[in-house]
Structures are given as structure tokens and as C-alpha cells.
Length: 96
View 1 (cartoon, helix red, strand yellow):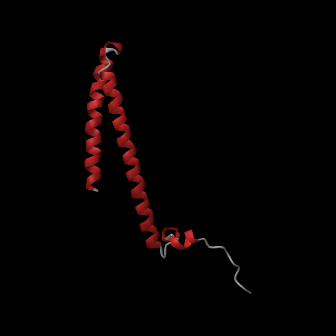
View 2 (tube, rainbow, N blue to C red):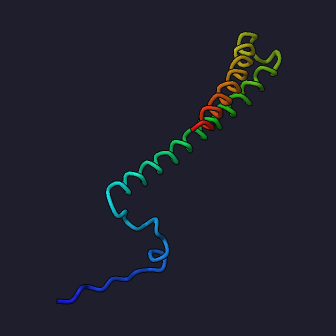
View 3 (cartoon, rainbow, N blue to C red):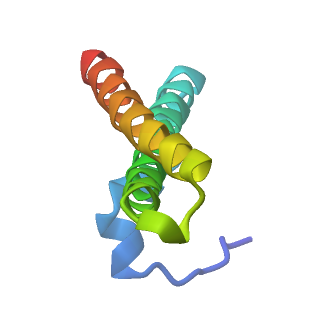
């Protein structure tokens, strides 16, 4: 009995990343690398959110009498804290 034919596109021939791993250890290494990449993306999203929080907080802090004094003060402190937290995240991420 002959082996059934199947169509193989040039993409599959040229893309080694789509080939199944040779062994379990290689598959584990690939999954760990993907998890690290996704974690980096997640950290980047958090950093971007902190930056957006900082911008909004600064706008409110400088908003004048339209905002209650307690809100302006809280926004000012939140903006400062967001900067510090983003810098901490960057420092921790740079070490790993």
C-alpha cells in the first residue's frame, strides 16, 4: 500500500519554528522561552498602564479648582508613585 500524498507549502519547508521539537527537553525549552516572551509583554503592558496613570494623574493634579483639593493631592502623589513603580519595574526587568 502506498503512502498518501499531502501538499507541503514552501512556508512549512522554510519555517523551522513550526517543526515539532525533536524531544521532550527541546519542547520544554521552547515553552519556557515562549513563557518568558509573554511575561515580558505583560510587564511592558503594566509599564504602559503606569505611564498612562501618571499622565492622567498629572492632568488632574494640575487641573486647578475644577477638582477638589483632596483629589488633586491624591492625583499628585499617585503620579509620583507611578513614576517610581515604573522605574522599579524597569530595573528589575533589566536584571533578568
